[in-house]
Image 1: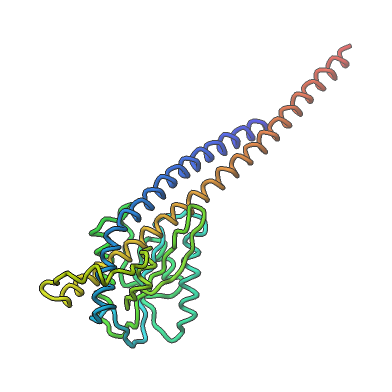
Image 2: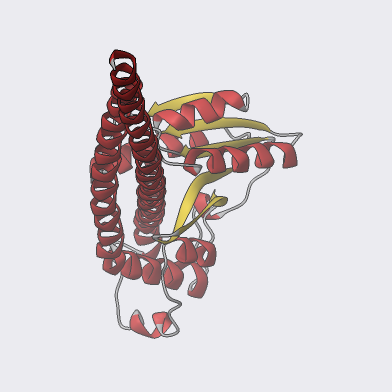
Length: 294
């Protein structure tokens, strides 16, 4: 009876190992695709930041999203996953949100949640959720990113008490390293935003635009460029978080697969011992029976 129970456990553990291995391979594929999409938008991001730098820094033009303002409220965009089974990915984001709240005791913090887990993070920290996006596609379409950005801008425009907009996300460093953090979003700082979008510093931006005429005028172009840059930044951060999520899930499923393999080996050893003990007992009973008969 004992060997039968152990054998059933061995089969269950083996099946779990197959599932976690399959989930690991799927997450590897999704992580690579997220990184590829992030790199694919680099050319557009480069040109957008060059234009913004030229108009805002070199020609001293301004825009409401580039200027600081006073207020006692903060709008926070929280980016987390829709699903679990990704190690400490969501908990690390939650810790950053908690630390930010403690460091701003005099501010009211509202949240826009991206992902089902971000809703839980906001509720745990007592934040008011203004909007929630938990039905987005796997790699975010342009319209989905625009919907998130429009919600952020509308909330910021409609309440002058917001001093800033920040984003809680996870920076993708490598397939084995990712770092949860909170970064400023609005007011937009050119140098900070460029680093977030992984844009290399351009030393000849001013010269590049020297021979250009801006129609209808430079301010109108800047008014169009700022939302484009904001969308580029938030899209990059969404993809960073997505790549980090899948990286965390790869590590979690790999550890689960390794643990399943170790458990299977232990169960197999116990099975062999139990089987040997049963055989030994049967032999003893046969010998004892033979001795009794004779």
